[in-house]
Length: 250
Image (cartoon, rainbow, N blue to C red; front, side, top):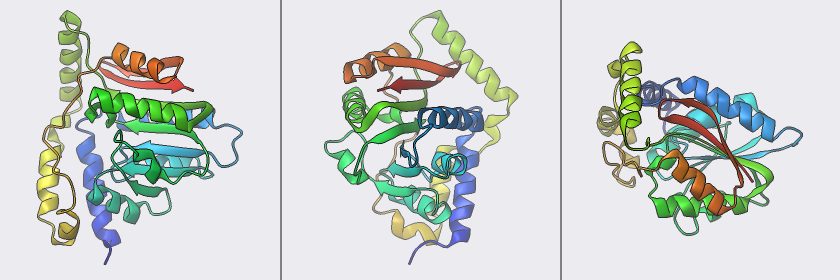
């Protein structure tokens, strides 16, 4: 028996609030990502977009509203988040379980052609350097010429005084927006574990550490890995402090 729509709606709504604690200007980021996808896929009758680390489909749903003619593949490894997405955003995307960056992860996408774009938000920082390098190389193979990877994430600053400044700017901005008042990652998952309707999805999910790991890579590290993978054209289109939206064109 699947989840009820009411349960999925409740937990997706709480997820949205929880994520605002970690991603300032979250809706603006999603809008910028959609702007890039819209531009890159202009003229494509049925563009194919992969959302990597989709969670319960927050970005996928927004892309579907912006680009209703697109075929969106929402990818994650967590069965509970995927089921929330399948239930609450059933018409937005095709939800697929696979572990990004592992050998053969792209087979689960079920592609019969090439991707037009791949997008991700606050997810790829969890991959270690080897897995991220493998992911970038796989995407370089999957994306059509002129296709793009659009990655919104928090990247580590270069060591030194500038790193302290970036951290301070982020902290002060969080205080101004009162983001600490939002439910955090760990308390969201603790509450999920207490919901009997979700119990059947929990034993099969990987236990995620809190806080989530960060690979420690800087902007220049990402640019180097992307160029080694075959993306010669790489730029940032949005930044605030240590948060970036990075675009790499194939």
